[in-house]
Amino acid sequence: MASWSKNASSSSWAPPGSGAVPAHAGSAGAAGAGAGASAAGASAADVHDAFARFVANLRQASPDITIAFLAIAPSIKRWEQRDSQTAANDAVQAFIDASGDARLRYLDANAACLGPDGTPDPVCFMDDLQHPSTIGNARRASILRPAFQEMLK
Image (cartoon, rainbow, N blue to C red; front, side, top):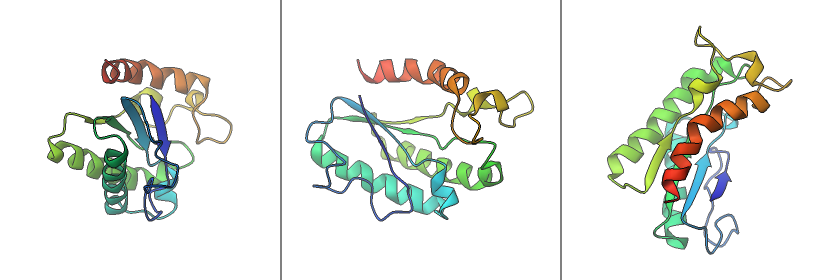
């Protein structure tokens, strides 16, 4: 499975010929805008449009690939951006839902790193308070693994 990530505030994810989309990407891939998109000022519409371009570009290279968007994850460091991150996630999910394309998936493992009060659980983050720790990655993997296994069938 291939994986791509791009700051959604850039003009395009994986333009043809950029090398960001391999000639053979495999049967499935996952993409995520990352929390940096909100930090860079990308709006929900920016993330939506960038993902739509990414899908179109990737479909040119690999028409039958299954593509998953990994929801932008909240973190302690970027907690104040959770509303814009949620709006961006909602915009991408709406794009995927409206596409009717069974080869587009929206995956959300954000609950894995939230505590009982709904805020980020410190044990799930590295010292930078943004990136997942080993525990955070293990919790996310327990949610994402079954979805990825299904995508690779």
